[in-house]
Image (cartoon, rainbow, N blue to C red; front, side, top):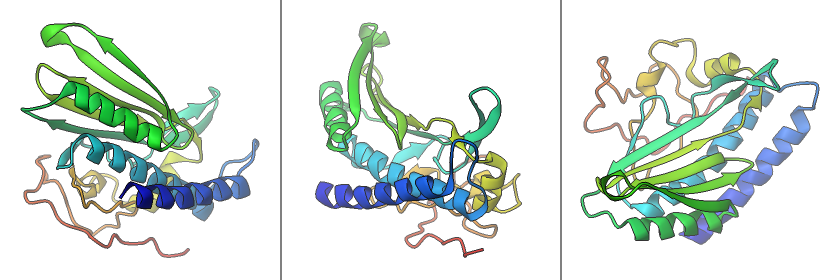
Length: 230
């Protein structure tokens, strides 16, 4: 399984490097299809790595923090003046029989398989103990696996650097013009067989009710829609 993931990631990363090299420079930001293609390549490469990390820590269903699936761009500033975008990813799970030492070892091994630089930090004691496996990579950005031994809670996060290109323009290409309802079309869970999705056209499956409650059972999308060429 890990060999297939690494092979797929190498191909995705190579494609991302080619896209970013070919469509952007220090004085320009990608737009239109070039922006979407670069962002999509980055998302899929990141998803492959982070899914491997999740399943290495716990091979079950993880909860997605609302709005933090990893495909919804947020606005940021590059060097304090130029606006760009970043992606935020958050997954959580609570395990009654959590093994903090085993989780720490599994997370480190998963990140190191993908060539991340890593470190471990620990804070507090007893009920306040917190362990963090911190990893960094140019594509994924800064990723952290946090374990709270007293409660069995595990939180996995990743956030990219601020990237060139308009967050608003990219969001419209990913979700269409239905900005108020777009969050309902983003998965609320990540399962072992989850398929990465970066295009959520209006009329697609809804994963949340209007009151913010995740739909149960969650829609299953094994063949995610592909954005048509513009």
